Image (cartoon, rainbow, N blue to C red; front, side, top):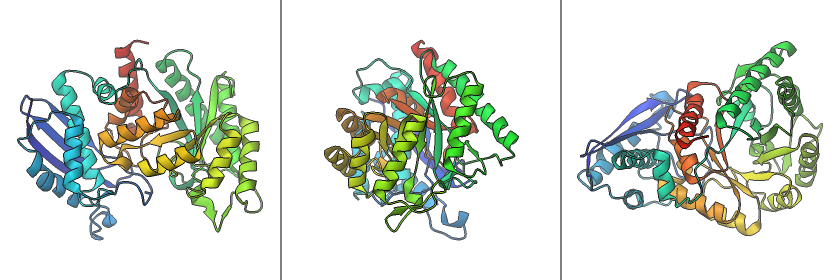
Length: 417
């Protein structure tokens, strides 16, 4: 078995110009892995903790030199010279070394960086593509394929610069041919949206995830623009290309009510669910993510009972890739789809364990990037390897997003269309 003979980390920048960590792990057979770790705009209290310096004199407290030091000293001291036998053994070593329930001693960014770099190094050593290695360790017995891409075309909420309440407005092409053809369709729609916004005189700056951040009056205006762009590209809305939403309702939930520009007064949970029912009747949504406040368990159950047979009710902030929350959500039938993010779990193995639990429940799996991304394409290989239903990497714009979509092109050519 090859041994780890080099492990180092450095501070780099993510797509929001915030510091993040890059890890390099080398084996004595010449194999190596390089991994950089993304981060989100906001984090939940029950997800693995990202370690930052909190030094106000560097990057407004967001530096990660402390996380770099944890890799170069604490983790390297334990791993150097050790055989890299398998992913689970390595990840268990990292978990034991941290010895906290939320990765707070070493940091989820430090731990995941090492875990991802190790996965790449093992795949390199075995002379197999990373997605094949991920498939093997996740016990995915299904034929490998490219997940259905979910393109975030318009950004609102915390990811946008405009005045929209909802965080993400998606197009989801119905796969009938190749992924390459799907990507072409999506790019053409993206460019058409740009022209439509310009025609309306709307501001069309670009948000954190590459989608346009326009100055529109209501959230429905954004959905109308998506539908119009789809039609202008000679596709049928709800037939050839479907729509999806990441509501991110926590951002406009206050004092038990939901306040959005589409309604003149705040709505309680039953009223907001009724609003979402009407929205689905009008636009035939495929995915509805984070539609309700993350602690409104009863509301989630009602929403899934009402709409779960028509679309996928997806939990992100509700679940936080947290095993305990997912167990509760399965028991209470709170949703029927889950966003999975490795950085929220902390290691590759823990992410796979949680994901397999979701699949066992019969839910749809959405593998997702973060709003603060890097050019690392690990998540694309991971989505293919675990057999995800959907992959959400943002708009087909900005290098850190396009890198993932381009990686899918390479994987498709290797798998065969």
